[in-house]
Image (cartoon, rainbow, N blue to C red; front, side, top):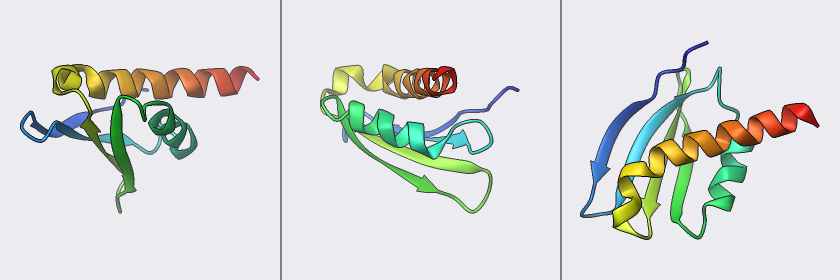
Length: 87
């Protein structure tokens, strides 16, 4: 299954990135765990949208890392999902 990630906003001035992740692929539990693990790098929130997507907003504590924050968060969430499936 291929999941689409659509970045809707990146603001270097505010140090924030906003994107959507597919509810059929990503789990809320692991995304919340990833957000907690990322607390030293960014602040964020996860919102459930009416459709098939989660809205993720991450505010970086270091704006130089903003361009990779979305991808690292997604990869980390996927790694958590894989680890929890193996247990």
